[in-house]
Length: 338
Image (cartoon, rainbow, N blue to C red; front, side, top):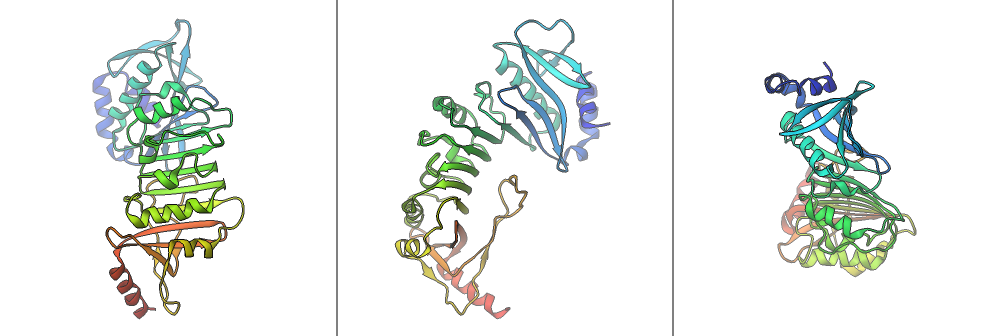
């Protein structure tokens, strides 16, 4: 039986749900994520992602009038009306009951498939009914030029748990995010934006990995970012940051001079920095892009090293779990095996 058939069968009784859960443990382990897909303001379709295949198991629909056809099912202790439409399970609920229905369905999914699976919300817009739902460990958000409700966006992040990853396309000009927004606490953040200050990841990010694409930026922002890290005032958890710019090439010499980089001797081959990605993005790369550079900086607070590489329009910054002394010893050790 397919996942959609098993999911529908699970509603028939508690015993049937227990049988399916116990007999499909190994199969459920192959599920990489369960995703809520919203398109242009519509309510979400729910998909299982397994082996790079998306399988629809249900969708939600708000109805201003009561739905006469269909059947009621107990979902996490709440009665919700369903219908089968073109062999797809559709959940109906009256206006004003979005939180009620979505939370019940999400709780049911966690109980049935397990809480270790990544639950993702993907949206081409920004839907208010997801506020306070704590739906996902990851969120994909698209903010277009006509987006105005920054308070609503702040509310979404403030009422959600700290997300494992945030993927965002932001074309909202220079509208300001809340400086204390929980978006900055996500473990991994991937943002395509017009201005590198919306949101201002280069000064406020508290997570591990950041991947930025921006059309416009200021050289001073990159210099300030490195100096903040060097001083130990910010980015204590940072492992990796990459920023690609769409305008002019990044001035390597100007930045290296301003941040006072150190150098591995030119006669020696430098170490290559790369890490498993916290979240595998749309490019499907399991690891961060390698940084092989003779230039590095040292953090004053704990003597940790970060490699820096500037190539044309790409700035890469990778933190080593080593002090400067350990880093240089490793460089020397590495030369022996060349």
